[in-house]
Image 1 (tube, rainbow, N blue to C red):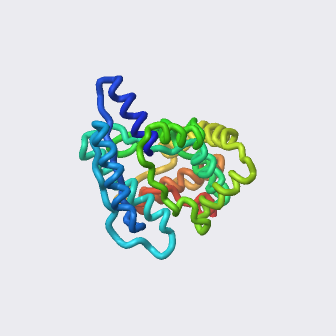
Image 2 (cartoon, rainbow, N blue to C red):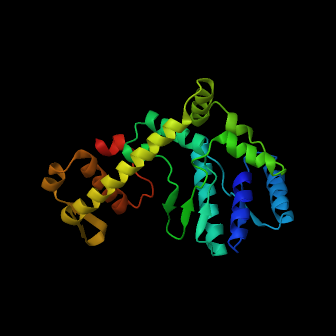
Image 3 (tube, rainbow, N blue to C red):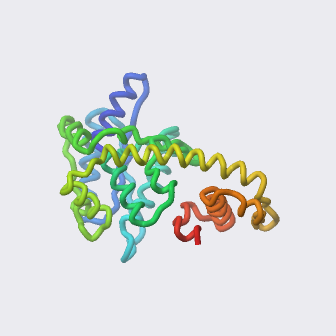
Amino acid sequence: SIALVWLADRWARAQDGSAFGIIVDHGLRFESADEARVAAEQLRAANIAACIRKVSGIPPENGVPAWARKARYDLLRDAAVERGALHLLLAHHQDDQAETLLLRLARGSGVKGLSGMRGVQPDADLRLLRPLLDFRKAQVAATAEATGWTIADDPSNRATKYARTRIRNALATSSGDTTRLAKTAATLASEDAAIEQAVTRLAVRAATIVPYGLIRLARSLLAAAPAAVSTRLLDRAVRMAGGAESPLRHSRIAR
């Protein structure tokens, strides 16, 4: 994130624009408040506007990473919209993409999940951009070090009780080719886009929205469509009727 805000600031100034930093304090460690304050002071000293948003609520006993991720994204989006920003930049890099692919593969995800994170992701009020996805973690870390700014070290990133950390360690010890894995995700993203187009065409023919939020699907048309398309449409319909934000697990919707 340090590398991203430094690069974003340089790029924005060259375009006669400006970047600003949103710092999220999850409150999961005693040191986090001081780390957030130091980060904000560094940005302001470099003439980069910054704000701190603190996560409220009590973390669950299980699923802390997922809880923290949702809370973080919600705060980031809210702060960006309050600022009137059209784009929210996130610092995910190529190694993150490789980890995401393997994590979702282990969970039995379909093409959409295995296509990984997108470089450009439309959201309700803005666009999420991940400009560092093509760069290795070592490159990003070297850029962060070159800024001369203080970089906080979160020990939870090394906690082996989390699946992502175990995958990260396995990639490091096996000299895993993150570049190849990231390219696989990009290929699947292209295939996912083609499936989405087919799903939309099928939805026009097979889906009818009836009063009270019910959705009627033409069974014969779904049965005649490729499974990848019909299950995706069923997923869309279930989420629209039920108000869910995230796609269902591929294994669940397939059943």
